[in-house]
Image 1 (cartoon, rainbow, N blue to C red):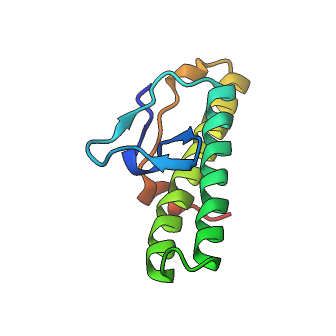
Image 2: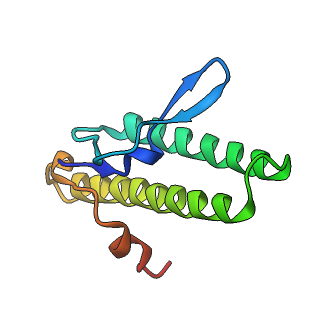
Length: 112
């Protein structure tokens, strides 16, 4: 599996909050199992909450918040899609590790 998300949405926890990883090529998160995908989802949701708090506190402007939230939401949708693919493959007797992260444009185009 070749799970890829923009490096800007991969976060590490530090004593003073969350910091985005350095900008650059996409981070390869291949081989993630369900618990690792859920951990990534939790990290992204935490980052979303932090962004909203910083916006309310006036630390970032609303345009920056919207741009970062859009990226986070796309990554969250990709994580949930990857989980659905893995479960569908397992249910069909196929290898769940063959599931791959789909492009954000594809995932964002799905009807819910």
